[in-house]
Image 1 (spheres, helix red, strand yellow):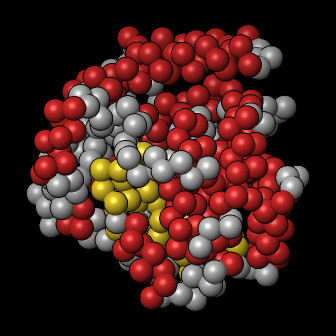
Image 2 (cartoon, rainbow, N blue to C red):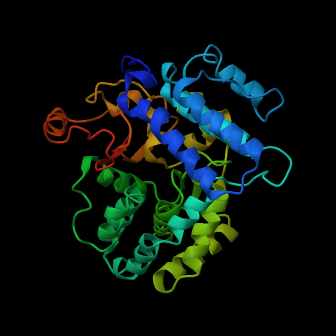
Length: 383
């Protein structure tokens, strides 16, 4: 097992510090402009934005949903500035506090209303998704191996509009930003263990979820799995993270399309009816914990899966630990705790990374100073 690196504290990372001092207040401004929020909601959101920048962390009010759990998870952290506690915990708690401010868990008209829905729906209705869907007819004519690679990379880059298109259009730029590429190992594993269950832990809604659903269909239609279980968030989280409603919206977008996209939608709907495509939303996916702390039910599911595919930056941080790892630390060593085979598909948008070759690290440091957080690089890692 690799030596445990120090946990990332927000104040120790310029990127993490910006999340609290710039990104979160800007997000709250967008919410205030997007919804007919009442005075109490507006005040709670404004106070949360101010608290993020210059206040100290306040716990959830007594009686709030999950208040006792959060009290345990945040023991020793309340009353401290947001920037002085572990980044993963603080970022997660911010979103729980945001839902409290909008009334998401309270009885009333705002109960269960996704505050990020306008942003997700705007993306789903936008040109990127429609073009991605339209390009699928051309992509579907590729040979199986080439098709699988194109769909995997489209899922990987799915929320990066400038690349998603080029991948499905076959313009050859899909691999240019990969700093690690274990995709061949992933396909070999799927073929060798065909007929089992594949778990896919989703990241974002919108264009990325559309790409994920197309990949799920490919895995099922080509016999690489008898069942795919898609794990999503049980409640809104990190702005664009996918919930069951988002999956339904993306499936509907496919079904309302023409050509191959509609065929994909119909096959997925049929697979769901036959129990071959299932959606799960465990509460653990909105907890401020890494995967070492997963409940036994999830541990059992991931143990029995052919492979668990983890999408996105947050799942990567939870897999390896949100720590100041030396980038050349072995991916296999830091993921040995995971109960079963695991693959990470991730666009780089935060500080943490492991498994880089020494030469790759040197080249990135020399040519792209913000390579860890710019979103211009990605990886596929398998253990």
